[in-house]
Amino acid sequence: MGMTLMEQPAPKVGSLEELTANTASLISLPEIYLKFKQLMDDEASDIQDFARVVTMDPNLTGVVLKVINSPLYGFSGQIHAIDRAINLMGLGQLHDLVLALSAVDAIRIGNDIEQIKTFWQRSIYCGVMARLLAQHLNLRDPAGLFVIGLLHEIGRILVFIKHPEAARAAIIDARQHACPLASSEGRIFGYHYGDIGAQLMADWNLPVKFHTVIGLHLDPIRSSEHYAEAALLGLSHKMATFARPGIEPYHYTEGELGLDHLKIDAADLEALLPEVEKLSIEMESMIIKN
Image (cartoon, rainbow, N blue to C red; front, side, top):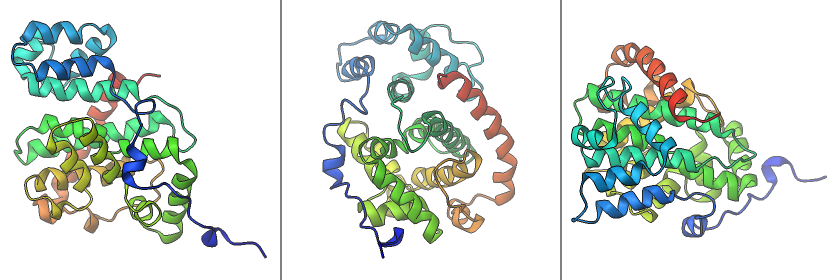
């Protein structure tokens, strides 16, 4: 008698360092973002330097301006040029937004596990919810959480492409154990998508906040400096898996959302959902290319 599915040896994905090594051809930031980052590190650069770099890509410029003028950012058509965006938003916020939109544009590689459109829909929903919750709790830099929400599952794309059999095995394992997919990833890979994403953020030399929040959003108690942001991202991720279902087979209960730790009332969260849905649909139409 042959082995059952549960008895099959788990596919090997190697160490976290091995997985994230040599990813430039699979998941890499485009040249325009790298030039923007170089300017951020150059004290002699000025607003016009940043504007020139971003406007090198007319498509990216158009999406950046659409998002900035959307209800999510609240400038309501006031911004028609990148230099004005810098004046009103500051370089930090523009940097984060250019980063996220560059990543969405760059990562359109097909895979056999999940449609890339479904992946980005879930990520956008997560980012929108994280931003609105951050505003609700009066946290600093809610716009940064929108960007982190967009990028938080990026580690899964890497596994989908490099180790599709391992990705399938984790999904099957999660269904059989009725547990979150991240738990099955931990059993099979030795780490989960948040760990992979955190490593990628570090490899890209992004701010510590990015890899801390992404790496610890499923276990925010381990984060002292960014606990609230990590907990908000974890809550937003869990809500996004329900609102934009994809590969995650597990449905989180209200008790697993961590509302008490964040001092968020369930009724307040429920009241926020129509706005999250509306803004997510608007962001999808601006960001996701068909």
